[in-house]
Amino acid sequence: MTRQDLSKTKTLVSRKIDSIAPWIKEISHIISRNPEIGLVEHKAVALLTSELEKNGFNVERGVAGLSTAFKASKGKAGEPAVGLIAEYDALPEIGHACGHNIIAASALGAAVGVSDLLEEVGGRIVVVGTPNEEGTVASGRGLTDLESQIRGKVKMVAEGAFNDIDAVIEIHPYTKTTLDASFLALRPVKIAFRGRPAHAAAAPEKGINALDAVILTFDGINALRQHLRSDARIHGIVTEGGEAPNIIPERASALFYLRAADKYYLDEVLIKVKRCAEGAALATGASLSFQESSYALSNMLSNSILSKIFKENLSCLGERVEELDQHEHLGSSDIGNVSQVVPTIHPLIRVGSNDLAIHSREFAEASVSESGDRALILASKAIAFTCLDLFAQKELFTEMRMELRRAIQN
Ligand SMILES: [Zn+2]
Ligand SMILES: [Zn+2]
Image 1 (cartoon, rainbow, N blue to C red):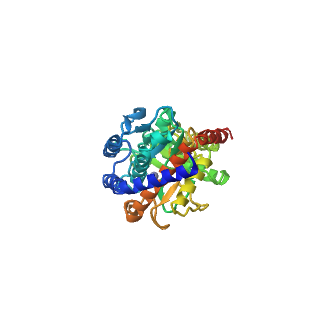
Image 2 (cartoon, protein in one colour; image 1 turned 90 degrees about the vertical axis):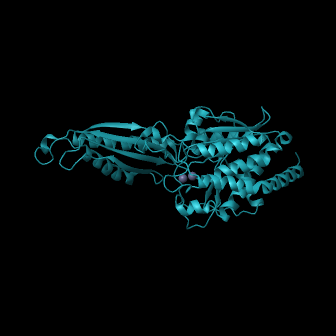
Image 3 (cartoon, protein in one colour; image 1 turned 60 degrees about the vertical axis):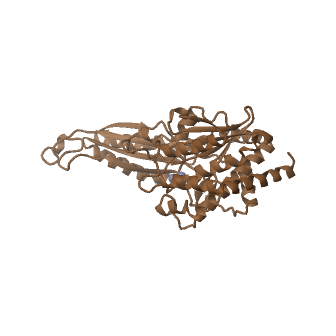
């Protein structure tokens, strides 16, 4: 395809997206009005998959054994595939305060926007529906349960759901438009101590205080912070701390999230945290159970080739691209795990001003405001244009794959 043809194709796609814009916005608003938390996003999935089917996409439900995960594909078999991530989980109490309605609807808008041209340009689009990004699953499986920390993409990567996909794009609403969301690697650990109960006043010498062991673990970790790299984050909550003040606590436990910019350094942090807990067990005489979640999140490897193309498309759509401030960290996301196996980008799109806090009720409102809708249509176009660029220059898929291989080896 010549440059001129590509630019004509983009104009066609832009017009198509404008013509379906009211529908894209409606989907975003319906998802926002019906917030569902992780792993029970049934209404959102039913809506997205039925709309994709109406537009000729082939839908596979229950991907990787997750009832609210799906893949919807369109295009010729054997052609390179771009995966467009749809997230649709909300937060308890505050609804779509992370604006995932925009992630879902922009993937849908972009996919349908280019879908008529796939035969002509020779490519495949796969909308990948990924549940529970937030890791806050339905009640009854509280945050203290390590296995409830499962994030959709982690399981989907482990079960090979991304093996037939050659590049992945996910956008996320934010307070500025920027290219690289740097996500930290994350490992949840549960630290539980078992002591010996005794009357806290009448027979304290006969007891072993499990709560003291938890407190000493926190103290040890607080001392450790001085000796960690500045990207390391350790933050925990006490999940069990005794039954009554007159009983020496027999059981006490804490749940910690450990994070760092790369998974190798995170391995070192984990060993040090474990030593703090072992020291606390030794000091108190309590026995320690140190449990790691099998659902660790990887750090984000942003693909620079894909990022550059996306940036050019944002600029050509008139959007100003800013940099993240040095202190701006976005925590962790399961898109990091995807980025370790497929060339991936996760740009952020502005839905409101800088004083807006993500995970707030105001952010949920902004995500369906005029400014949120503007971001949604802009993102749909930028994603669609980027797919067209990739399909028009298929050698880019090999170059992106090589960049990923180099990044993993480093
Ligand atoms: Zn969030
Ligand atoms: Zn989010």
